[in-house]
Picture 1 (spheres, rainbow, N blue to C red):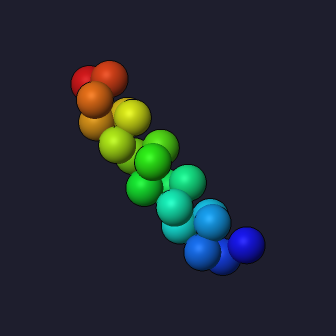
Picture 2 (tube, rainbow, N blue to C red):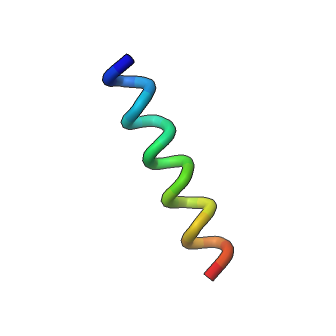
Length: 20
């Protein structure tokens, strides 16, 4: 679950960066 949490964090960050 720790590895998945990191993957989701990166995906979320990329989405936020694209939204900005």
